Image (tube, rainbow, N blue to C red; front, side):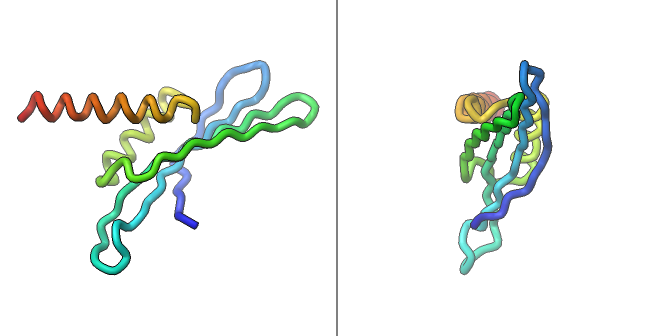
Length: 107
């Protein structure tokens, strides 16, 4: 099983209680040849309903970042905007496109 680091939590206002947890997923690129790391993101949302019902939704995308600082900044963005598992992929894609556009502009 891979490691995961709980990085932050958020709550959504709704007719029922919704808790969101944000994780960094560190992975070594190669155990044998290097200590370089890559980082993924996981979001887990738990909805608690009146009467004891519970629903858990989770989305994980691996190997998005190669620098810890970039991964941490991105997770902070997710927490600030209370991003849910459903929209994680879209937010990651938008972030990558925006980062590429910035890199092109400075090149």
